[in-house]
Amino acid sequence: AGGIAEMAGLEPEVRDRTDALDSLGNTTAATGKGFAIGSAALTALALIVSYTEKFPQGSLELTLTNPPVLIGLFVGAMLPFLFSAFTMQAVGRAAQKIVVEVRRQFKEIKGLMEGKAEADYKTCVDICTRSSLKEMIVPAALGILAPIIVGIVLGPNGVGMLAGALVSGFVVAIMMANSGGAWDNAKKYIEAGNFGGKGSDNHKAAVVGDTVGDPFKDTSGPSVNILIKLLSMVSIVFAGLVMKFNLIDAITNLIK
Image (tube, rainbow, N blue to C red; front, side):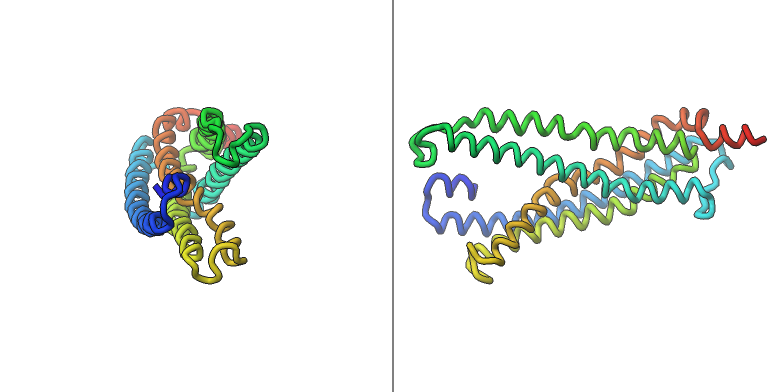
């Protein structure tokens, strides 16, 4: 609404009001995302319990001194960070394509800068649509393949990966939701005339912060919820495969 008000050339007070509402929305969204993340964590925990029940009693040795469990914990704790890096890079690449396209249109479409010509919106929408699908291939593959590979390598005791991803993913998602909203609100606060206002060094720093904050709160943070549930779900689906074929059992049988 704020963007529409600005593009329509409405009075500055309209934008002031929409900015205040936007800030309130960011805070409310951050609070709501906290509940969503808590729900995802509880769901993932229930799925982990379901995964352990897929195996015969006594076949799992879920102690920290068991190497497969410990390795799984480290791998799982790393996954939310790696996944978040992929999703943030995806946002950055898509945004850069839009910047290049907008510059091209300003350069080639006469009268666009003065508001006398119509912009080619279709191309920008097409770039966003294609990027949203293409850029999610790698993060989606990570969420699906990681539990399968870890299960085949470490065996059933690799369930530590699910616990590691749950713990670090919960904390990372909470941090992203809150810090992303805080960065966005900090920029608005400075643009309202505080700490030097627009054009100041503080404003430039806040813009950089918000550039990171937007994918934090809108992309990577909410996506981590899906990741921790997806890892558990895929593990349950392929539990039978992991029980029959895994590297740890193969090496143990070979030694025997």
